[in-house]
Image 1: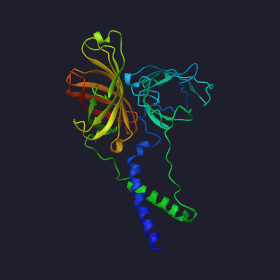
Image 2: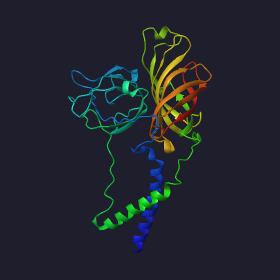
Image 3: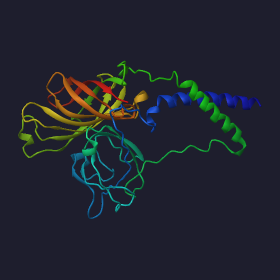
Image 4: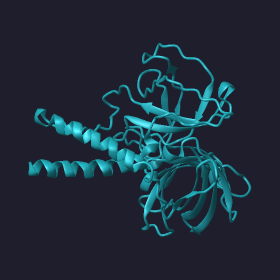
Length: 347
């Protein structure tokens, strides 16, 4: 009996802290999101058919960094650029019908994951000015398309402990009810909630480390025009980036996320970079959330402003702006550290 009481006490403590964790991570929920009265909500359910092989593949590699050339051990080597034309169907069979307007998705896609969330940042026709999110779930894969294994917990109890399981469930529900009123997201040094009096608003301040030099660069050139090397602005150069985001300017400071995507030189005069990056975060309640940035970065200006066009997780349906300031730059290598100050309005 004494052991039973000890076990129940442990269960109470476990379920209490589990409830707090659930409240802190409630952005993973797929429940309804309240919308402003002027907005309309549309739910779309369809299948995307992705094919690398066969006589008519739907995805083809058009460019890649030197380091990724010939590397077939990875599903998508760093620096690889694909062009796709993939059917969207009503059912899981490739012959199912598809029709409709379009949405624009700009987000990081973890290829090997069973489940992913992407940011919908725009659309046309019926989805003009669209803002939302896309949830992807893999339904099948070939042998050459590895799937990240799912982790499953062992059974919670045996036949002898069914009553304890029922009691634990009751304790969990009670603990969640107790935790919800006061378990609010806590500010971090680099991320703070702002009192906007209405829509949730978050300010993010971090440092972006873009390294082109060395044995392990975080940004690699994947394509360029024939005249790029003759251009003083490297017009036409396209780079793939996987840049760390840190709390402070020092590379060894706390990692808070990564900026992943493409940027390229889009200006023949001056130095303008067109950027399409997903800033994914890994710290605190923002772990697993991201913002999507799409715009022109006039890199030589003291302060540049870039639009935030979408997001996932905490930042679902985000809109906002990012101010970038160069903290350090090495003209010999192109390496840079950039300070970001981002204001995000989200649900």
